[in-house]
Image (cartoon, helix red, strand yellow):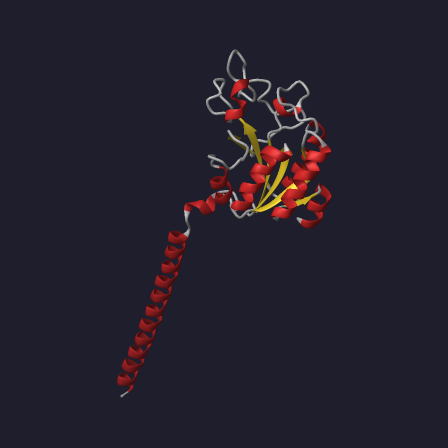
Length: 239
């Protein structure tokens, strides 16, 4: 009888061990399934750098900014300090800095039709890559991690991959700086709003040929729903 009792106890212990092992195996299998699911659900784009906000610095090239430039905008050079302050603030907040530039071939084949005369009949054009006119004005210097994004028309979005890059990085808000209000700043702002980005104009970092032209464009863009605020206001609102 004692022997039967011992045998029964041994069987009971084996049964408990077997159940415990099954539970352990089941838990391990469930954990592996979760890990596998997570690995499969992680899409490669998740590894790309992410930023909520991007600063778009528009056309701050010698031909537009320097008094010796072929299409100098009178108010552009004075905005360089404000643009640098905006960039410094943005970098401190992990905002992406994107330099938008005009890059035209010497033939003028890719320039706006009204400006073709600047490229033909012996004329050398403007904002040609590799020339003084196409370089960023002194006082503005991109960092290695910044993006250089060339364009061929007023809007930085027209026939470029800017929207593709911004969406890949998760950008929701764009802050615009540069020159000039009625052309490239306004064209870019309109398209940014059309692509559903929160669009912000840093008013003391943008320029036009006259204060009156700047004011008229700010008035229009505000009525469109584009936010036009100073650098101080940006720092207060976007902390």
